[in-house]
Image (cartoon, rainbow, N blue to C red; front, side, top):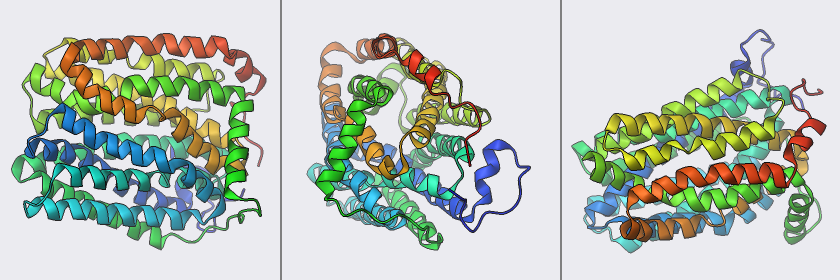
Length: 425
């Protein structure tokens, strides 16, 4: 696939910067950065909006669960839509919905009319909208860039995600919440989503193959069939399913209260811990993007995910804020490195015509237990204690990664399908 018409003839750029030769890619990245910044602001603002409404871990679980239910219930539809419809138009629609939803929460909060059920309902809608974004983005990227630039492009995304969503966004939200109100921070998120939509509107159209004559149900069935018969894909998503059940809920729901109860921190201190993850993620993404895919890409990826969360046990055991920040940064490095490899692996080994559906199945299968994780994290943390929960979720994934590698013979698969050589034009 040739780069789009905005590509220049500059060939001597460092590997991480090569995708920026494409004008379409530059606008896509600008939009994604603004959207991720808004999501980072939203993530912290919602925590303290729930607290401002008198809620605690259980109430925050309710709002977080609503978002994950919306995401999970719509992601398969999003994958089919990404393979059948214009991907840029889908992404514009996503940003429009997020702008309106966050704006509604801000108005209700500033007027004193916001209630917990309204916050949960809008979180459900925002989750459903997000379900259409990643499949469309993942399927669009190989049509903008040549194959050898995909690892670098995924590295850019991997760096932007923690910097914008986990560092800059939460830091900005912490400042706004501390100085003003949570609803003002939500309004900032809405403005960021609006700017992201405007960047997509300026992006030149990308020629796409129209959807075939088959029905959406048949398209979805074809994606499931590919997943089941593809060993490396099935094994990774099986690992991710259990991994998400263990990890997501405690991190999203319990971490703010660990910072508060163990280190005596508030919104600013929590934002600093999240920023540590973001900075680490940026370092991990940039590091991986400067290289070719590792020869043992499946082994490296799964061990980065599995062993990389061991520092969560440290967070559960310490009352020192700096140690929480350092542990969070290590988790960010390993998680981002694995995620960049995974995104490139999908784009290199999955047929282009199936990429939207497989990306949505990636979301669906790996996040199938996300609502459960969100729902039980608060109550379990209150019963057994946050330190014990963080200890368990830090240790168990190591064994899950080893089981996935051995049971599905993934070392043999990665040797049989090398990706460290230059891709064919």
